[in-house]
Image (cartoon, rainbow, N blue to C red; front, side):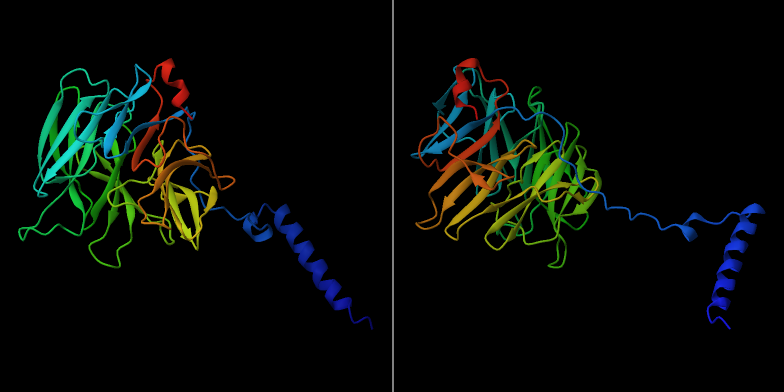
Amino acid sequence: MDPNAETRRRRRWIGLSAVLLLAAGVGVPVSVVQLRDPVADPVAELPAGPAGPRLVTAYAADQKWYVIDPAAGRYRQVDGGGVASVSPDLRLYTDVATQDGRTSLVRITPTSGAGPDEYHEIAGDAAIPVWSPDGSRLALPVFGNPADGLKTAHGFTELILVDVGAGTMQRRKIEIGDRYGRWVSWAGDDTLLVGTDGAGAEEEAGVAVVRRDGRMLSWRPLPAGDPCEAPPRTAPPSHGGKVLSCTQDGSDQIYRVFDPRRGTTGPELGRLPLSPDRRAEPLFWQGDDALVLRLFDLAGDGDFADVRVARLSTGQIEAAPRGLPEAPVQASVGSSAGLSAAGAKLTF
């Protein structure tokens, strides 16, 4: 007797049963007879939009501050104070002075040096003013001061919004629950991104999307990993509502795109290998392959810094932008929109 005969009969019976079921109009679920392709997790995409020429908008050297004069196409020394931020169209710059952490004075000045200044007095310790994409508004985080006079270690829960054209300002409580703000940047003319820490040690760092009236639309945790060292109160580079996140892997800095609205992270854009005696702080990114950063030489006293351009796809650090002195102490970078043809030599 054929030992495989029974097996063949069972196979014929199963095949015949399937045919009869189909002939009788009985539907067989596709998932029973066909494996589904796995669905990939959504990832953050690169922000859309062309990346125009960049420009160092202001820098500090030899205990003096210099700001770009867009019409003249050159840098000029500012008349007292410093430069906190420069408007996207290069017409105005801000400076902030805080007395004992209790009162801050914000000054808005034309970059050309001509024309009247605009002043705003704010109760509290105001951080660097952040310009809206169209240059019509400023957002300033206000760090509170407890009654004992010691600076809060938590962060901020209030923003000052300045309407530059109207010369008015509003104080807004931001609704981020038990979290505290660390930095702020604009995602669009009507929404802001607020980097947060929690009140407890176990609370995740994340990014909240907040309306100008203070109402939180969403909150998402930042990508897991050891974050790169960054200056306090300073927002990571962002473009088109997407944040360029940085995590540390040994001596390498790994950069990815983070979408705070969806909570998704894109694939690795690139690695920036740094020797142990170097530290990098990202300054400016327009959604493309180039990242402008401050590069610190830690072999000495750590004060030596240089502004460089890094290519994320290759990890190469290129030469400093044109028009800068050697080793500026501080610098801000922005788009060259609004710069006259005479200043084209300063773009990169």
